[in-house]
Amino acid sequence: MAAISRDDVAHLAKLARIDMSDVELDHLAKEMDVILGAVARVQEVAGVDVPATSHPIPVNNVFREDVVKPSLTSQEALSGAPAQSEDRFKVPQILGEE
Amino acid sequence: MTTIKSTAAQMADALAAGSITSVELTQQHLDQIERVDSAVHAFLYVDKEGALEQANAVDVKRKQGDLLSPLAGVPLALKDVMAQKGIPTTCGSKMLEGWRPPYDATVVTKLKNAGVVILGKTNMDEFAMGSSTENSAYGPTHNPWDLTRIPGGSGGGSAAAIAAFEAPLAIGTDTGGSIRQPAAVTGTVGVKPTYGGVSRYGLIAFSSSLDQAGPCARTVLDAALLHEVIAGHDQRDSTSINAPVPQVVKAAKKLDVKGLKIGVVKELGGEGFQAGVLNRFHESLDALVEAGAEIVEVSCPTFDYALAAYYLIAPSECSSNLARFDSMRYGIRIGDDGSRSAEEVMNLTRHEGFGPEVKRRIILGTYALSSGYYDAYYGSAQKVRTLLMRDFSAAFQLADVLVSPTAPTTAFKIGQNDNDPLAMYLNDIATIPVNMAGIGGMSLPSGLADEDGLPAGFQIMSPAMKDDLMYQVGGTLEAALLSRWGAPLLSQAPVLAGK
Image 1 (cartoon, each protein chain N blue to C red):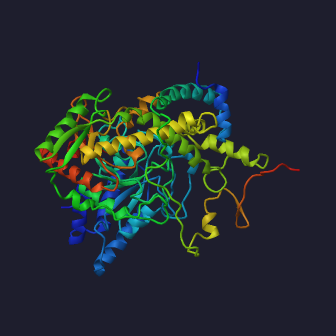
Image 2: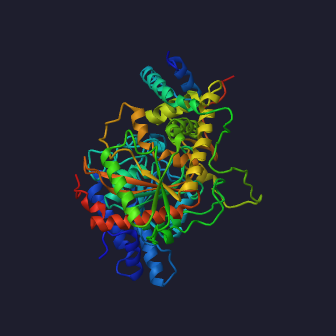
Image 3: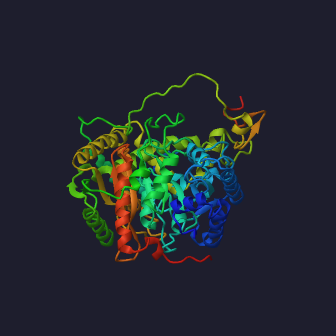
Protein backbone atom coordinates (compact mmCIF):
# COMPACT_ATOMS: atom_id res chain seq x y z
CA MET A 1 0.00 0.00 0.00
CA ALA A 2 1.22 3.47 -0.77
CA ALA A 3 2.32 5.39 2.33
CA ILE A 4 0.79 8.53 0.92
CA SER A 5 -2.05 9.10 -1.54
CA ARG A 6 -2.60 11.77 -4.16
CA ASP A 7 -5.35 13.24 -1.96
CA ASP A 8 -2.91 13.42 0.95
CA VAL A 9 -0.47 15.38 -1.20
CA ALA A 10 -3.25 17.72 -2.34
CA HIS A 11 -4.12 18.35 1.32
CA LEU A 12 -0.47 19.01 2.21
CA ALA A 13 -0.17 21.43 -0.72
CA LYS A 14 -3.20 23.28 0.60
CA LEU A 15 -1.64 23.48 4.08
CA ALA A 16 1.62 24.71 2.55
CA ARG A 17 -0.27 27.34 0.49
CA ILE A 18 0.99 26.10 -2.87
CA ASP A 19 -1.39 25.69 -5.83
CA MET A 20 -0.54 22.50 -7.70
CA SER A 21 -1.62 21.27 -11.10
CA ASP A 22 -2.99 17.74 -11.58
CA VAL A 23 0.26 16.75 -13.29
CA GLU A 24 2.30 18.06 -10.35
CA LEU A 25 0.15 16.21 -7.84
CA ASP A 26 0.38 12.90 -9.74
CA HIS A 27 4.14 13.19 -10.02
CA LEU A 28 4.72 14.32 -6.45
CA ALA A 29 2.50 11.60 -4.95
CA LYS A 30 4.68 8.94 -6.58
CA GLU A 31 7.93 10.61 -5.52
CA MET A 32 6.76 11.20 -1.97
CA ASP A 33 5.88 7.55 -1.64
CA VAL A 34 9.42 6.52 -2.62
CA ILE A 35 11.09 9.18 -0.44
CA LEU A 36 8.96 8.39 2.62
CA GLY A 37 9.76 4.70 2.16
CA ALA A 38 13.46 5.57 2.31
CA VAL A 39 13.40 8.00 5.23
CA ALA A 40 11.06 5.89 7.40
CA ARG A 41 14.07 3.80 8.43
CA VAL A 42 14.89 6.40 11.10
CA GLN A 43 12.28 4.55 13.17
CA GLU A 44 14.51 1.45 13.31
CA VAL A 45 16.97 3.09 15.72
CA ALA A 46 14.81 5.74 17.39
CA GLY A 47 14.19 3.90 20.66
CA VAL A 48 11.97 5.31 23.41
CA ASP A 49 15.00 5.80 25.66
CA VAL A 50 16.78 8.09 23.17
CA PRO A 51 16.25 11.80 23.81
CA ALA A 52 15.54 14.07 20.83
CA THR A 53 18.02 16.72 19.68
CA SER A 54 16.66 19.76 17.86
CA HIS A 55 19.85 21.75 17.76
CA PRO A 56 23.60 21.00 17.76
CA ILE A 57 24.33 23.51 20.53
CA PRO A 58 22.21 24.47 23.53
CA VAL A 59 19.77 27.18 22.49
CA ASN A 60 18.80 29.79 25.01
CA ASN A 61 16.80 32.93 24.79
CA VAL A 62 19.19 35.78 24.13
CA PHE A 63 18.13 39.16 25.46
CA ARG A 64 19.60 42.59 24.85
CA GLU A 65 19.09 45.90 26.57
CA ASP A 66 15.82 47.53 25.59
CA VAL A 67 17.37 50.55 23.89
CA VAL A 68 16.54 51.94 20.48
CA LYS A 69 19.22 51.23 17.89
CA PRO A 70 19.53 52.40 14.28
CA SER A 71 17.26 50.36 12.03
CA LEU A 72 15.72 50.44 8.57
CA THR A 73 13.59 53.43 7.65
CA SER A 74 10.06 52.58 6.58
CA GLN A 75 10.98 53.37 2.97
CA GLU A 76 13.91 50.92 3.17
CA ALA A 77 11.70 48.27 4.73
CA LEU A 78 9.11 48.82 2.00
CA SER A 79 11.68 48.89 -0.82
CA GLY A 80 11.02 45.28 -1.84
CA ALA A 81 7.25 45.35 -1.39
CA PRO A 82 5.19 44.12 -4.35
CA ALA A 83 2.72 46.93 -3.53
CA GLN A 84 2.63 49.73 -0.97
CA SER A 85 0.39 52.54 0.05
CA GLU A 86 0.74 55.34 2.63
CA ASP A 87 3.99 53.94 4.09
CA ARG A 88 2.48 50.48 4.54
CA PHE A 89 2.58 47.12 2.80
CA LYS A 90 -0.48 46.85 0.55
CA VAL A 91 -1.93 43.34 0.41
CA PRO A 92 -4.89 41.74 -1.37
CA GLN A 93 -8.13 41.49 0.61
CA ILE A 94 -7.93 39.23 3.63
CA LEU A 95 -11.59 39.27 4.72
CA GLY A 96 -14.65 38.94 2.50
CA GLU A 97 -16.62 41.92 1.21
CA GLU A 98 -19.22 41.84 3.99
CA MET B 1 54.02 38.34 -11.13
CA THR B 2 50.54 38.34 -9.68
CA THR B 3 47.92 36.81 -11.94
CA ILE B 4 44.42 35.42 -11.52
CA LYS B 5 46.08 32.05 -10.93
CA SER B 6 47.94 33.29 -7.84
CA THR B 7 46.62 32.31 -4.44
CA ALA B 8 44.70 34.84 -2.35
CA ALA B 9 47.65 34.94 0.07
CA GLN B 10 50.03 35.79 -2.80
CA MET B 11 47.62 38.47 -4.05
CA ALA B 12 47.42 39.94 -0.55
CA ASP B 13 51.23 40.04 -0.32
CA ALA B 14 51.55 41.68 -3.74
CA LEU B 15 48.94 44.28 -2.78
CA ALA B 16 50.75 45.00 0.48
CA ALA B 17 54.09 45.27 -1.35
CA GLY B 18 52.54 47.67 -3.87
CA SER B 19 53.43 45.53 -6.91
CA ILE B 20 49.78 45.54 -8.00
CA THR B 21 46.76 47.66 -7.11
CA SER B 22 43.39 46.28 -6.11
CA VAL B 23 41.81 48.02 -9.11
CA GLU B 24 44.23 46.17 -11.44
CA LEU B 25 43.64 42.84 -9.69
CA THR B 26 39.87 43.33 -9.68
CA GLN B 27 39.91 44.24 -13.39
CA GLN B 28 41.89 41.05 -14.17
CA HIS B 29 39.14 39.02 -12.55
CA LEU B 30 36.34 40.97 -14.24
CA ASP B 31 38.12 40.28 -17.56
CA GLN B 32 38.28 36.56 -16.77
CA ILE B 33 34.57 36.57 -15.91
CA GLU B 34 33.88 38.31 -19.22
CA ARG B 35 36.02 35.70 -21.00
CA VAL B 36 34.73 32.43 -19.48
CA ASP B 37 31.47 32.94 -17.63
CA SER B 38 29.29 32.56 -20.72
CA ALA B 39 30.54 28.94 -20.69
CA VAL B 40 30.71 28.33 -16.91
CA HIS B 41 27.74 30.42 -15.71
CA ALA B 42 29.10 30.73 -12.17
CA PHE B 43 27.66 34.21 -11.70
CA LEU B 44 24.06 35.39 -11.52
CA TYR B 45 25.10 39.02 -11.18
CA VAL B 46 28.42 40.80 -11.69
CA ASP B 47 28.78 44.12 -9.91
CA LYS B 48 31.51 45.63 -12.10
CA GLU B 49 31.16 49.22 -10.98
CA GLY B 50 30.69 48.39 -7.32
CA ALA B 51 33.71 46.06 -7.31
CA LEU B 52 35.98 48.65 -8.93
CA GLU B 53 34.75 51.29 -6.48
CA GLN B 54 35.49 49.01 -3.50
CA ALA B 55 38.92 48.24 -4.98
CA ASN B 56 39.70 51.89 -5.51
CA ALA B 57 38.69 52.70 -1.93
CA VAL B 58 41.19 50.11 -0.66
CA ASP B 59 43.93 51.47 -2.93
CA VAL B 60 43.32 54.99 -1.64
CA LYS B 61 43.49 53.83 1.98
CA ARG B 62 46.67 51.90 1.31
CA LYS B 63 48.27 54.95 -0.27
CA GLN B 64 47.37 56.96 2.81
CA GLY B 65 49.15 54.40 4.94
CA ASP B 66 45.99 53.20 6.72
CA LEU B 67 46.17 49.94 8.63
CA LEU B 68 44.47 47.32 6.44
CA SER B 69 43.18 43.83 7.02
CA PRO B 70 45.26 40.98 5.47
CA LEU B 71 42.80 40.33 2.62
CA ALA B 72 42.11 44.00 1.84
CA GLY B 73 41.80 44.48 -1.91
CA VAL B 74 41.48 40.77 -2.76
CA PRO B 75 38.37 39.94 -4.86
CA LEU B 76 35.68 37.47 -3.80
CA ALA B 77 32.52 35.88 -5.19
CA LEU B 78 29.45 35.82 -2.93
CA LYS B 79 26.87 33.04 -2.97
CA ASP B 80 23.49 34.48 -3.86
CA VAL B 81 22.01 33.20 -0.58
CA MET B 82 23.62 36.17 1.22
CA ALA B 83 21.86 39.52 1.44
CA GLN B 84 23.99 42.36 0.06
CA LYS B 85 22.52 45.84 0.31
CA GLY B 86 21.27 47.16 -3.03
CA ILE B 87 22.54 44.16 -5.02
CA PRO B 88 20.09 41.68 -6.64
CA THR B 89 19.77 38.68 -4.32
CA THR B 90 17.67 35.80 -5.66
CA CYS B 91 18.79 32.68 -3.75
CA GLY B 92 18.56 30.97 -7.16
CA SER B 93 14.77 31.36 -7.09
CA LYS B 94 12.19 33.08 -9.25
CA MET B 95 10.50 33.96 -5.97
CA LEU B 96 13.07 36.68 -5.27
CA GLU B 97 13.62 37.87 -8.83
CA GLY B 98 14.42 41.58 -8.79
CA TRP B 99 14.77 41.82 -5.00
CA ARG B 100 17.48 44.14 -3.74
CA PRO B 101 17.99 43.73 0.01
CA PRO B 102 17.85 46.90 2.13
CA TYR B 103 20.59 45.58 4.42
CA ASP B 104 23.85 43.60 4.50
CA ALA B 105 24.28 40.13 5.98
CA THR B 106 26.80 40.16 8.85
CA VAL B 107 29.22 38.16 6.67
CA VAL B 108 28.95 40.89 4.02
CA THR B 109 29.51 43.63 6.61
CA LYS B 110 32.64 41.83 7.81
CA LEU B 111 33.91 41.40 4.24
CA LYS B 112 33.35 45.09 3.51
CA ASN B 113 35.04 46.13 6.77
CA ALA B 114 38.04 43.98 5.81
CA GLY B 115 38.21 45.62 2.37
CA VAL B 116 37.49 42.38 0.51
CA VAL B 117 36.19 43.27 -2.97
CA ILE B 118 32.85 41.64 -3.79
CA LEU B 119 32.75 40.86 -7.53
CA GLY B 120 29.17 39.59 -7.68
CA LYS B 121 26.68 36.92 -6.74
CA THR B 122 27.12 33.24 -7.60
CA ASN B 123 24.65 30.66 -8.87
CA MET B 124 23.18 28.02 -6.57
CA ASP B 125 20.44 25.45 -6.28
CA GLU B 126 17.19 27.22 -5.46
CA PHE B 127 17.17 28.15 -1.76
CA ALA B 128 20.33 25.98 -1.42
CA MET B 129 18.38 22.75 -1.98
CA GLY B 130 20.39 20.45 -4.18
CA SER B 131 23.76 18.89 -4.93
CA SER B 132 24.30 19.97 -8.52
CA THR B 133 23.20 23.61 -9.03
CA GLU B 134 20.75 22.22 -11.61
CA ASN B 135 17.88 23.40 -9.39
CA SER B 136 18.71 27.06 -9.99
CA ALA B 137 15.80 28.90 -11.61
CA TYR B 138 18.41 30.65 -13.75
CA GLY B 139 19.97 27.60 -15.39
CA PRO B 140 22.81 25.30 -14.30
CA THR B 141 26.46 26.13 -13.65
CA HIS B 142 29.01 24.06 -15.59
CA ASN B 143 32.03 22.35 -14.02
CA PRO B 144 35.23 23.99 -15.32
CA TRP B 145 36.87 20.51 -15.52
CA ASP B 146 34.22 19.33 -17.98
CA LEU B 147 31.47 21.70 -19.03
CA THR B 148 28.99 18.85 -19.55
CA ARG B 149 29.20 18.01 -15.83
CA ILE B 150 27.76 19.49 -12.65
CA PRO B 151 29.93 21.63 -10.32
CA GLY B 152 28.24 20.20 -7.22
CA GLY B 153 25.69 22.04 -5.17
CA SER B 154 24.16 23.91 -3.75
CA GLY B 155 27.16 26.23 -3.97
CA GLY B 156 28.21 25.17 -7.46
CA GLY B 157 28.59 28.76 -8.61
CA SER B 158 31.05 29.67 -5.85
CA ALA B 159 33.17 26.53 -6.40
CA ALA B 160 33.15 26.90 -10.20
CA ALA B 161 34.10 30.59 -9.98
CA ILE B 162 37.18 29.64 -7.99
CA ALA B 163 38.13 26.68 -10.18
CA ALA B 164 37.75 28.84 -13.31
CA PHE B 165 39.97 31.59 -11.81
CA GLU B 166 37.08 34.07 -11.88
CA ALA B 167 37.75 34.74 -8.19
CA PRO B 168 40.40 33.51 -5.73
CA LEU B 169 37.91 33.34 -2.87
CA ALA B 170 34.19 32.78 -2.43
CA ILE B 171 31.57 32.49 0.27
CA GLY B 172 29.45 29.37 0.43
CA THR B 173 26.86 27.99 2.81
CA ASP B 174 26.65 24.39 3.91
CA THR B 175 23.48 22.75 5.22
CA GLY B 176 24.28 19.15 4.24
CA GLY B 177 27.46 19.54 2.18
CA SER B 178 26.83 22.56 -0.06
CA ILE B 179 30.35 23.96 0.46
CA ARG B 180 32.29 20.68 0.70
CA GLN B 181 30.76 18.60 -2.11
CA PRO B 182 31.17 21.37 -4.74
CA ALA B 183 34.77 21.80 -3.52
CA ALA B 184 35.35 18.05 -3.96
CA VAL B 185 34.06 17.86 -7.54
CA THR B 186 35.81 21.04 -8.70
CA GLY B 187 39.25 20.37 -7.16
CA THR B 188 39.00 23.27 -4.72
CA VAL B 189 38.96 23.75 -0.93
CA GLY B 190 35.75 24.34 1.03
CA VAL B 191 35.15 24.61 4.76
CA LYS B 192 32.02 24.33 6.86
CA PRO B 193 32.97 25.93 10.18
CA THR B 194 31.54 24.76 13.50
CA TYR B 195 27.83 25.60 13.73
CA GLY B 196 27.56 29.01 15.35
CA GLY B 197 31.09 29.97 14.31
CA VAL B 198 29.91 32.31 11.54
CA SER B 199 26.83 34.51 11.85
CA ARG B 200 23.69 33.47 9.97
CA TYR B 201 22.25 37.01 10.02
CA GLY B 202 21.32 37.86 6.42
CA LEU B 203 21.81 34.30 5.20
CA ILE B 204 18.46 33.37 3.66
CA ALA B 205 17.42 30.48 5.88
CA PHE B 206 16.89 26.95 4.56
CA SER B 207 17.31 24.74 7.65
CA SER B 208 18.29 26.91 10.58
CA SER B 209 19.72 24.22 12.86
CA LEU B 210 22.05 23.06 10.04
CA ASP B 211 22.90 26.14 7.90
CA GLN B 212 26.43 27.49 8.22
CA ALA B 213 28.39 29.90 6.00
CA GLY B 214 32.04 29.27 5.27
CA PRO B 215 35.02 29.93 2.98
CA CYS B 216 35.72 28.51 -0.51
CA ALA B 217 39.25 28.87 -1.89
CA ARG B 218 42.00 27.17 -3.91
CA THR B 219 44.28 26.52 -0.92
CA VAL B 220 43.85 25.67 2.75
CA LEU B 221 45.67 28.84 3.83
CA ASP B 222 43.43 31.02 1.64
CA ALA B 223 40.36 29.39 3.21
CA ALA B 224 41.82 30.06 6.66
CA LEU B 225 42.46 33.73 5.87
CA LEU B 226 38.85 34.14 4.75
CA HIS B 227 37.57 32.10 7.71
CA GLU B 228 39.12 34.57 10.15
CA VAL B 229 37.50 37.50 8.32
CA ILE B 230 33.94 36.14 8.52
CA ALA B 231 33.92 34.23 11.82
CA GLY B 232 33.06 35.54 15.28
CA HIS B 233 30.21 36.26 17.63
CA ASP B 234 27.28 38.33 16.37
CA GLN B 235 24.52 39.60 18.62
CA ARG B 236 22.17 39.52 15.63
CA ASP B 237 22.31 35.70 15.54
CA SER B 238 21.10 34.07 18.75
CA THR B 239 22.87 30.81 17.82
CA SER B 240 26.21 32.53 17.28
CA ILE B 241 28.86 31.17 19.66
CA ASN B 242 30.33 33.76 22.01
CA ALA B 243 33.90 32.46 22.17
CA PRO B 244 37.24 33.32 20.55
CA VAL B 245 37.56 32.29 16.89
CA PRO B 246 39.86 29.25 16.54
CA GLN B 247 43.28 30.29 15.21
CA VAL B 248 42.89 28.70 11.80
CA VAL B 249 45.52 30.72 9.90
CA LYS B 250 48.21 29.74 12.39
CA ALA B 251 47.03 26.12 12.15
CA ALA B 252 47.05 26.14 8.33
CA LYS B 253 50.71 27.21 8.40
CA LYS B 254 51.83 24.56 10.91
CA LEU B 255 52.51 21.85 8.29
CA ASP B 256 52.98 19.26 10.99
CA VAL B 257 50.73 16.41 12.13
CA LYS B 258 53.19 14.46 14.24
CA GLY B 259 51.41 12.75 17.11
CA LEU B 260 47.93 13.50 15.78
CA LYS B 261 45.46 10.64 15.59
CA ILE B 262 43.40 10.51 12.42
CA GLY B 263 40.22 8.44 12.56
CA VAL B 264 39.03 6.77 9.37
CA VAL B 265 35.25 6.37 9.55
CA LYS B 266 34.53 2.76 8.64
CA GLU B 267 30.99 3.50 7.46
CA LEU B 268 32.09 6.12 4.90
CA GLY B 269 33.95 4.46 2.08
CA GLY B 270 32.35 1.17 1.17
CA GLU B 271 29.50 0.42 -1.18
CA GLY B 272 28.52 3.26 -3.50
CA PHE B 273 31.95 4.90 -3.44
CA GLN B 274 33.76 5.14 -6.78
CA ALA B 275 37.01 3.13 -6.89
CA GLY B 276 39.09 6.07 -8.13
CA VAL B 277 37.79 8.27 -5.31
CA LEU B 278 38.76 5.62 -2.76
CA ASN B 279 42.22 5.19 -4.34
CA ARG B 280 42.97 8.90 -3.92
CA PHE B 281 41.59 8.78 -0.38
CA HIS B 282 43.96 5.95 0.61
CA GLU B 283 46.93 7.70 -1.01
CA SER B 284 46.13 10.78 1.07
CA LEU B 285 46.05 8.65 4.21
CA ASP B 286 49.50 7.28 3.28
CA ALA B 287 50.76 10.84 2.87
CA LEU B 288 49.48 11.74 6.33
CA VAL B 289 51.19 8.68 7.82
CA GLU B 290 54.45 9.72 6.15
CA ALA B 291 53.97 13.16 7.69
CA GLY B 292 53.85 11.55 11.14
CA ALA B 293 50.15 11.05 11.84
CA GLU B 294 48.72 7.89 13.32
CA ILE B 295 45.74 6.32 11.56
CA VAL B 296 43.03 4.59 13.58
CA GLU B 297 39.77 3.09 12.39
CA VAL B 298 36.61 4.30 14.06
CA SER B 299 33.05 3.11 13.73
CA CYS B 300 30.01 5.39 13.65
CA PRO B 301 27.13 2.95 13.20
CA THR B 302 24.36 5.57 13.15
CA PHE B 303 25.89 7.23 10.05
CA ASP B 304 23.89 4.74 7.98
CA TYR B 305 20.77 6.57 9.18
CA ALA B 306 22.07 10.13 8.82
CA LEU B 307 20.80 10.66 5.28
CA ALA B 308 17.28 9.52 6.19
CA ALA B 309 17.21 11.74 9.29
CA TYR B 310 18.55 14.70 7.30
CA TYR B 311 15.81 14.36 4.69
CA LEU B 312 13.24 14.72 7.47
CA ILE B 313 14.87 17.46 9.54
CA ALA B 314 15.98 19.75 6.69
CA PRO B 315 12.60 19.64 4.85
CA SER B 316 10.74 20.14 8.13
CA GLU B 317 12.72 23.25 8.95
CA CYS B 318 12.48 24.48 5.34
CA SER B 319 8.71 24.11 5.25
CA SER B 320 8.59 26.50 8.18
CA ASN B 321 11.36 28.87 7.02
CA LEU B 322 9.99 29.23 3.49
CA ALA B 323 6.56 30.21 4.80
CA ARG B 324 7.95 33.76 4.80
CA PHE B 325 7.72 33.84 1.02
CA ASP B 326 4.09 34.85 1.05
CA SER B 327 4.17 37.60 -1.63
CA MET B 328 3.22 40.27 0.88
CA ARG B 329 6.43 42.08 1.87
CA TYR B 330 9.06 41.22 -0.75
CA GLY B 331 9.56 38.99 -3.74
CA ILE B 332 7.20 38.41 -6.61
CA ARG B 333 3.39 38.57 -6.40
CA ILE B 334 1.24 36.70 -8.92
CA GLY B 335 -2.44 37.17 -9.73
CA ASP B 336 -3.22 40.26 -7.65
CA ASP B 337 -5.90 41.62 -10.00
CA GLY B 338 -8.26 42.89 -7.34
CA SER B 339 -10.55 39.87 -7.55
CA ARG B 340 -8.44 37.41 -5.57
CA SER B 341 -7.98 37.11 -1.81
CA ALA B 342 -4.58 37.31 -0.12
CA GLU B 343 -4.61 33.54 0.31
CA GLU B 344 -5.37 32.91 -3.35
CA VAL B 345 -2.59 35.27 -4.42
CA MET B 346 -0.23 33.54 -1.98
CA ASN B 347 -1.09 30.09 -3.38
CA LEU B 348 -0.58 31.26 -6.96
CA THR B 349 2.68 33.04 -6.15
CA ARG B 350 4.15 30.01 -4.41
CA HIS B 351 3.04 27.81 -7.32
CA GLU B 352 4.89 30.05 -9.78
CA GLY B 353 7.79 31.15 -7.60
CA PHE B 354 9.07 27.80 -6.29
CA GLY B 355 10.71 25.12 -8.44
CA PRO B 356 10.08 21.34 -8.20
CA GLU B 357 12.76 20.48 -5.61
CA VAL B 358 11.68 23.26 -3.26
CA LYS B 359 8.04 22.18 -3.54
CA ARG B 360 9.04 18.55 -2.95
CA ARG B 361 10.85 19.47 0.27
CA ILE B 362 8.13 21.80 1.56
CA ILE B 363 5.53 19.05 1.07
CA LEU B 364 7.79 16.43 2.67
CA GLY B 365 8.44 18.72 5.65
CA THR B 366 4.78 19.61 6.01
CA TYR B 367 4.02 15.89 6.13
CA ALA B 368 6.79 15.07 8.63
CA LEU B 369 5.55 17.79 10.98
CA SER B 370 1.84 17.06 10.65
CA SER B 371 -0.17 15.73 13.54
CA GLY B 372 -0.22 11.93 13.59
CA TYR B 373 3.12 11.63 11.76
CA TYR B 374 5.27 13.97 13.85
CA ASP B 375 6.58 11.34 16.28
CA ALA B 376 7.22 8.70 13.63
CA TYR B 377 9.10 11.03 11.28
CA TYR B 378 10.40 14.33 12.66
CA GLY B 379 10.57 13.00 16.24
CA SER B 380 12.48 9.87 15.20
CA ALA B 381 14.86 11.93 13.06
CA GLN B 382 15.68 14.09 16.08
CA LYS B 383 16.53 10.96 18.04
CA VAL B 384 18.85 9.83 15.25
CA ARG B 385 20.50 13.20 15.61
CA THR B 386 21.25 12.43 19.25
CA LEU B 387 22.74 9.07 18.24
CA LEU B 388 24.89 10.71 15.57
CA MET B 389 26.29 13.14 18.11
CA ARG B 390 27.05 10.22 20.44
CA ASP B 391 28.87 8.46 17.59
CA PHE B 392 31.00 11.54 17.02
CA SER B 393 31.75 11.96 20.74
CA ALA B 394 32.91 8.36 20.98
CA ALA B 395 35.00 8.64 17.80
CA PHE B 396 36.66 11.85 19.00
CA GLN B 397 37.74 9.97 22.13
CA LEU B 398 39.86 7.80 19.81
CA ALA B 399 41.00 10.36 17.25
CA ASP B 400 41.75 14.10 17.01
CA VAL B 401 40.05 14.44 13.63
CA LEU B 402 37.97 12.10 11.48
CA VAL B 403 38.38 11.64 7.73
CA SER B 404 36.51 10.22 4.73
CA PRO B 405 36.09 10.86 1.03
CA THR B 406 33.99 14.04 0.70
CA ALA B 407 31.61 12.73 -1.95
CA PRO B 408 31.11 9.16 -3.15
CA THR B 409 31.74 9.99 -6.81
CA THR B 410 33.32 12.58 -9.05
CA ALA B 411 31.15 15.11 -10.92
CA PHE B 412 28.29 13.49 -12.81
CA LYS B 413 26.75 14.63 -16.09
CA ILE B 414 24.25 17.47 -16.07
CA GLY B 415 20.79 15.90 -16.27
CA GLN B 416 21.91 12.44 -15.13
CA ASN B 417 19.90 12.38 -11.89
CA ASP B 418 16.98 14.52 -13.06
CA ASN B 419 14.28 11.98 -12.35
CA ASP B 420 15.72 10.34 -9.28
CA PRO B 421 15.73 12.54 -6.17
CA LEU B 422 16.99 9.68 -3.98
CA ALA B 423 20.05 9.08 -6.17
CA MET B 424 20.74 12.81 -6.02
CA TYR B 425 20.48 12.84 -2.22
CA LEU B 426 23.21 10.15 -1.97
CA ASN B 427 25.85 12.73 -2.99
CA ASP B 428 25.72 14.10 0.53
CA ILE B 429 26.06 10.80 2.39
CA ALA B 430 29.51 11.63 3.81
CA THR B 431 28.96 15.33 4.46
CA ILE B 432 25.57 15.30 6.23
CA PRO B 433 26.67 13.82 9.61
CA VAL B 434 28.88 16.89 10.17
CA ASN B 435 25.92 19.27 9.88
CA MET B 436 23.71 17.09 12.05
CA ALA B 437 26.28 17.29 14.88
CA GLY B 438 27.22 20.92 14.28
CA ILE B 439 30.95 20.17 14.05
CA GLY B 440 33.55 21.44 11.54
CA GLY B 441 34.22 19.90 8.12
CA MET B 442 36.68 20.62 5.32
CA SER B 443 37.12 19.25 1.81
CA LEU B 444 40.40 19.53 -0.08
CA PRO B 445 41.51 17.94 -3.36
CA SER B 446 43.04 14.45 -3.08
CA GLY B 447 43.80 14.07 -6.79
CA LEU B 448 42.09 12.89 -9.94
CA ALA B 449 40.07 9.67 -10.10
CA ASP B 450 41.58 6.99 -12.35
CA GLU B 451 38.36 6.27 -14.27
CA ASP B 452 37.52 9.75 -15.48
CA GLY B 453 40.40 12.08 -14.60
CA LEU B 454 38.08 14.26 -12.51
CA PRO B 455 38.83 15.69 -9.04
CA ALA B 456 38.11 13.75 -5.85
CA GLY B 457 37.76 15.29 -2.39
CA PHE B 458 39.23 14.40 1.01
CA GLN B 459 37.08 15.35 4.01
CA ILE B 460 38.44 16.24 7.45
CA MET B 461 36.04 16.58 10.39
CA SER B 462 37.01 18.31 13.62
CA PRO B 463 35.25 18.61 16.98
CA ALA B 464 33.09 21.69 17.60
CA MET B 465 35.15 24.90 17.97
CA LYS B 466 38.34 23.01 17.18
CA ASP B 467 38.27 24.12 13.54
CA ASP B 468 42.01 24.76 13.78
CA LEU B 469 42.63 20.99 13.83
CA MET B 470 41.13 20.43 10.38
CA TYR B 471 43.17 23.33 9.01
CA GLN B 472 46.33 21.84 10.53
CA VAL B 473 45.70 18.43 8.97
CA GLY B 474 44.43 19.94 5.71
CA GLY B 475 47.42 22.24 5.34
CA THR B 476 49.84 19.39 5.96
CA LEU B 477 48.12 17.05 3.51
CA GLU B 478 47.92 19.75 0.87
CA ALA B 479 51.67 20.42 1.12
CA ALA B 480 52.46 16.70 0.92
CA LEU B 481 50.27 16.18 -2.16
CA LEU B 482 51.57 19.33 -3.83
CA SER B 483 55.14 18.07 -3.56
CA ARG B 484 54.04 14.80 -5.22
CA TRP B 485 52.11 16.53 -8.00
CA GLY B 486 54.70 19.24 -8.56
CA ALA B 487 51.95 21.78 -9.32
CA PRO B 488 48.47 22.60 -8.00
CA LEU B 489 45.79 20.16 -9.15
CA LEU B 490 43.94 22.93 -10.99
CA SER B 491 46.89 23.33 -13.36
CA GLN B 492 45.64 20.09 -14.95
CA ALA B 493 42.17 21.50 -15.62
CA PRO B 494 41.41 22.33 -19.25
CA VAL B 495 41.99 25.92 -20.31
CA LEU B 496 38.62 27.57 -20.72
CA ALA B 497 37.64 29.65 -23.67
CA GLY B 498 34.49 31.72 -23.89
CA LYS B 499 31.57 30.62 -25.98
